[in-house]
Amino acid sequence: MRLHTAGTQVPDTLPATPAVSRGYAWLVFALSFGLLLSDYMSRQVLNAVFPLLKAEWLVSDAELGTLSGVVALMVGVLTFPLSLLADRWGRVRILVLSAAAWSLATLGCAIAASYGQMLLGRFMVGVGEAAYGSVGIAVVLSVFPIGVRATLSGAFIAGGSFGSVLGVSIGGAIAQEFGWRWAFGAMGFFGLALAAVYGLVITEKRLGSASTRRNRSTPGERAPIRAQLPRLFSSLSVVCAYIGSGLQMFIAMALLAWMPSFLNRYYDMTPGEAGLGAGVFALIGGIGMVLGGIVADRLSRKVAARKWVVAIACSLGSLVLLMAGFHLPTGPLQLVLIGAGTLVAAGTAGPAAAMVANLTPAAIAATAFATLTLANSLLGLAPGPAVTGMLADSMGLLGALRVIPLVALVTSVVFTIGMFSYERDLRRLGLLPGTAPTTSEARA
Image (tube, rainbow, N blue to C red; front, top):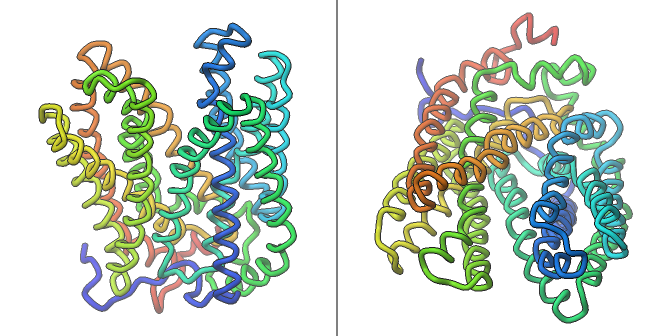
C-alpha cells in the first residue's frame, strides 16, 4: 500500500478552524490543566503521608497499598461509562461535578477518624477522578486547531506526571509542618476553588457552539451517539493507536514505579534521596510527553502520517537508550542514558492520542479517550510495575529493568501496522478529500 506522498495532507475528523477565540481556547486549556494537576495532587498526596498514617493507626503496608490502589481501581472501572455520560449529557457539567467530588472526598480524608473512613474517602476520590482525564482532553481538543492535537495531548497527559510530583512534594512539606490532615485539606480546598472558577468561566454554551458547528461539517457526525460507538474500533489504525499507547505506557510505568528502588539499591541513596531522584525522572517523562507532541505536530503539518513515524522513533529510541543504560555500570553516564530513555519512552503519548482523535467522531471524543485510558491502564499502568516486580524476584531488579525495554519492539511493530493502515482507514471512513464513508460506515 502506498503512503502519502510529500505535500499530501490527511484531514482529520474536525475542521481546522476552531469555533472559539484563541484567547478563550488557551483559557480552557489552562483551567483544564489546572484541574488535572489537582486530580493527581489529590491522588498522590497519600504517598507522602504513608509513614504518618502507619504510625498513628498501626496499619500494615498492604492496607496502605489498598488506600492507593482503590483509586486506580475505580478510575479503571468507571472511566468508560462516565465518559459516555459526558458525551451525552455535557462535558463541562461532568468535569465540574467530578472535580467537586474528588475535592470533597479529599477533604473527607482530612477528617477521617479511622482506616475504614479513609478507605471510603479514597474510594470516592477514585469515583470523582474516573472520567476527568478522558473528558478533559476531549474538551481541550475541541477548541483548538487540529494541527496542535499531538502537542496538546502530550502536554495534557504530562500533567499527570507534574501533578504527581507536586502532590508528593507539597503534601510532604505540609504534612511535616502541620500534620497529615492539613496535607489532604490543602489539596481538597485547591480543587474546590479551581472547580468553582472552571464552572463560572467555561460554559457548555460556548463549547457547545463549537461542537455543533463542527458536527455539521463532518461526515456522519449527525448520527446518534449510540450509533457511533462502533467507530471506536472501526479501523485497524485506531486499534493500533490504543494498543501501541498502552504497551509503551508499560515501560514508562515500570520505570516510574521502580526507579526509587533502583536508586536505593544500586546507588546507595536513602529512601528520601531516592524518592527525590525518582521525581526528577518523573518530570523528565512529563517533558518527554510534551516534546513528543510538539515534534509530531511540526513534522506532520503536510503529511499527517508522520505522527506515526514519531511514535515509532520514540519507541525504538527508548529501546536502545534504556537497554544501553541499564547494561552500563553505575555512574553518571548510566543515569544520563536512562534519563534520555525515559524522555523518549513517554514521547508516544501525544501522537497516539492525536491519532485516536483523528480516527473517531467528535461527538464521542470523551468516550474515545476513555477507551485509550482503559488501554493504557490494562496494558501499561497495571501490569508494568507488577510484571517488573515478578521478574525482579527471579533475576534481580537490574535484570528485570534490562528486559522490560524489549516491549518497545512489539510497540514499534504495532505502530508500524497502524501507519500503513492509516490512509486506507481514512479513505474508508470518508475522511480524505473527495471520499465518502462506505455504506456500512455511513449507516453507523
